[in-house]
Length: 263
Image (cartoon, rainbow, N blue to C red; front, side):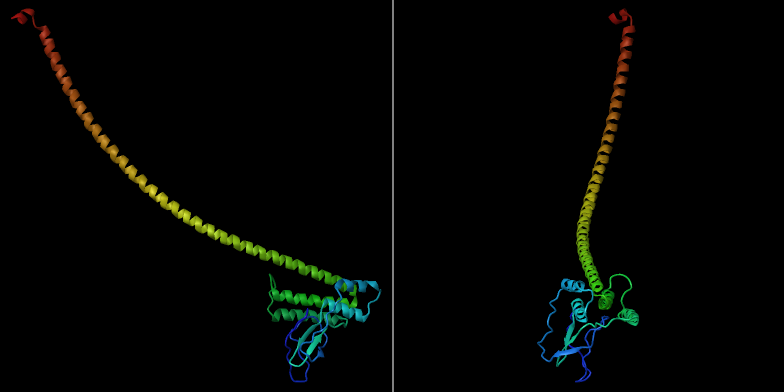
């Protein structure tokens, strides 16, 4: 990766300090021009062509190793107020002490930058990516073919992480849409429930009114039926008494002798 930025100077003749601290081991900065508009030439060699070059011969020269390293880890350039500087990764083979130092620096930076131990953490991801790049550099210096293979593994891992990140972002967006839809549906359902409660209250009130009317009508009908029954009983009793009196008179009339009747 190429990092550009304004460097810091301790005095007018001192070498500038690179703007970005990294776990990848770089050589000392080299001033390439005093013109601010100048740029380092692009490395036109692709990774596939470098892989073919590395596999074509039994041994790999130092120049080829440097070209492969510059393709894997492009030089970074930065400028100060007077010059443009370039800094390439070093092609010096790593020793056991370098690996131990790399591990100690990784642990120190993780602690200093307060990287989270679990979960998604951009700081931890960046530091481990730099550590992996440094390991690729160390392996490439010793064996270019192995370094290029590790480069393929790194690129595949990055593509997988990007795919997972895209999937995660799309799932988060889908979850947000579903949550908004659920909230909207919840509001509509609450409105519907309130409307139904109001309707139930109206129907309950109407039911009570009709029940009161039915009870009132039933009470009036019972009273009317009681009055009619009493009146009917009185009429029946009166007719029975009249019938009984007429029957007694008829019996008495039939029992009288005929002579008495003629007189």
